[in-house]
Length: 252
Image (cartoon, rainbow, N blue to C red):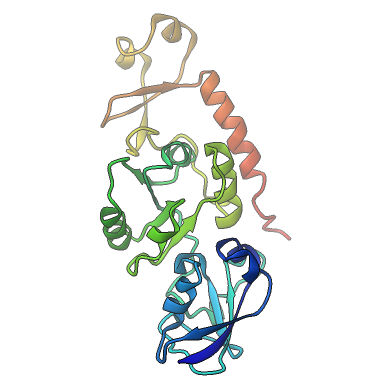
């Protein structure tokens, strides 16, 4: 057995036992234990990790630990570009295609509303989520940290907020999504592209009062739902405007 010292930073401490947070922690590890295994044994999913330093050197998850190693573990950096020293995965975490687990249907709908390709089915077993995420290079969204520990999931986010709107705000801040928004381009029900359609084409598919009051309609060719700029649309537009205002100032 060997002794290794770990220090976790920022929100990664949320996954640790209270007596291990915001401090250096000495752990007894098996000989030839990997960084990934040791980090997840402490409760931190590897998908939440963006940078690992062992004795000051950036390493990957497969680095084997040695007696006396000093391990510093960091989450996604928002203010600094760490790509030149990134070793834990080939690309940074930020990639706006998602797959959401069974508990995040409301969040999935809101991400689609913002134009982010988001797969969701409340019948997906964990094995399917893992396989789809690996095959299609999607970010897994979940409140189940054990799901994020699955080996082939390289990108994922543990969602801390409980309500869909707060969850959306959380992801916009953590993954810097504001600059990638394409509002109302995907169907919120089936994730397929939307297209604008003439009023006459949907005359029999919307309430008469709506047809009389609205000029612009969009439809999904998969589920055949029709959308228009009603009060719900306006509330969602106001929410997105607020979130998009959080985008970094490119000139600065």
